[in-house]
Image (cartoon, rainbow over all chains, first blue to last red; front, side):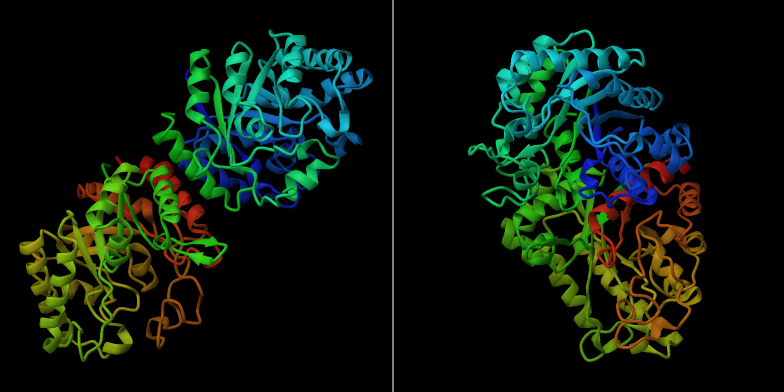
Length: 318
Length: 311
């Protein structure tokens, strides 16, 4: 296997009522294929206005996963490379307001919630269930060893379940997550089973949180099993990501600096992510999985796909 | 099929300053070139008058082409000559203005002489409304004009002169178009087939291509959902943006409800051994749409649909 290019569809859906219609999905798929990507990454979601958010929603919209898979193939895609999910998000279909990996009593429900995703990924040619590593830092506070152990139990159980479908659980530390911290991330990975739990390195999220994604790749080379490339021009030097309600005040509203857009295409001017160095480090570690490009908060998803596609081909050799 | 894909530039994007073209600044130019290169275009077509802005931005048009090559675009392939026809100054059916058309074209091509431009694309007659009634003599006068221009452009600059017939052009019917090419010297005047323009005019572009295939030097592959059923081609002062029938005549290849049968055309092109550049165009895409997405969708169709049709 060699490194393959995938594209995250999250940038098409900034709000719950965007990107609902299948014709919009089709245009996005064609755009992704035209720019040289062969896979797509889906984002977990709930409700009738998120038709790609969960397997049952795909079935409700497209008739079956097989029909959806054939559509992807007909367009020129080879797989849904991955599905990015957050156990803490509400699930209307399960009458759940969200669950926490830090509560042992919810682990079984989390595993069952994830089971259809793993099965669907297997059917659609994917191999990674990208799971939010820990809830938002402002919500969980200090993460002690007991919390790490509890979360690790959940991820190990999740990983064991998905492994039965040929899918690996890959932990993703977004900018708001308590895991977007070198020391917490190190402890969390050390506590989980390398056989079934890996690491997603999301360059833009880690950089914005103040981490060095190249160093993270070097430090956890053996655990790296998923790569998400996006750029940012900013670092949260004021620690705004740790403040209450950072989801809105920081990420959506732009924080104290009123930043209009945190994330950009790889190679953007003044970008802080050294994508070639990240890829060199990953390749040096023998990485041969999907590289997922994304650009949440873009004002024009098609433009971002093409800009990322250009960079992938002409600057990154992908 | 060994086509090479070129992009006819009508691009614009929304910016904090409102809609702008890539000629506004280098950042927009960088984004534009990267995007068209990303989806597989190798060539770029543009309007002749862009030489002024590009020379200012890059120092010379040659430097601009070097910049394009650094970003994955091989060359500037075709120029579209935007002549503002006026019977007092320059109008192909007015013989007294032919000298001016030849000389102004010579001056223009001189500004591009550092490059290897392949085609100079012209609308070979003025607006229908400015020319009507269209007579045999007016067509003959236009043929004389473009034969002179074509001889000059080929012998002095190595550039073929080629006719592009907008649906509102005076030479717009199947019979008149064929007649025009019968009256021009095939050594000096070629035919540039714009699929949507002919469809709108009620002319089957495949049938026209079959008739004139040995004169064809290029294509604009674009689609339309509308045939002109209201006499829009006669609308004054403008048909393309102001006729009441529709506010958007043109769409990208593969659009739902598109009237152009591209698959049939590609089979015909294969049958005749066409192996040159094919230009993708989708002007006015910003009317209810978006140039970036429309560009990607066009190339998806070119590769995934037409690429499988062609031999």
